[in-house]
Image (cartoon, rainbow, N blue to C red; front, side):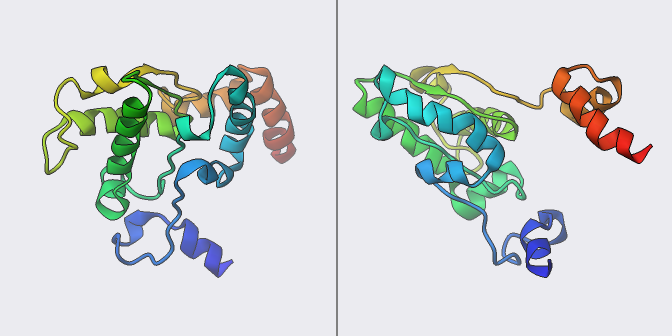
Length: 176
């Protein structure tokens, strides 16, 4: 349990250098880091060859969710890696823009990336004001927390959706 708490602790309690355990993975392997993303992305990985995609034309990016978005760049250069991979994919695919499919908190992370990449250094990626237009064809957000946690909490109590109703029945009603 002590090791789990060390891994999962919030970065608000320590500086970037204090935590010796990093939760990052790059490439297709990062899909297996999270059960939730695996449910969503593994079917996409297995079905994508049918429509012409292969591993060399796909890239999955992970980030340490315990850090602020900007600190993922400071410590791991995650934003720079995403930028470089997108530029490489555009260059090797005849100049065609990429389709980005962020999931959950990755949706907000990618929104930060799009602002970061066009901002001038040292705080930004230095891509210029048209970088996103020239490199990104489309973004398909899946399960982005645009309404935040209050919407999720309200859903638990009001049973707005079938899956939320099941969670309410199994979790909340068991405490009443």
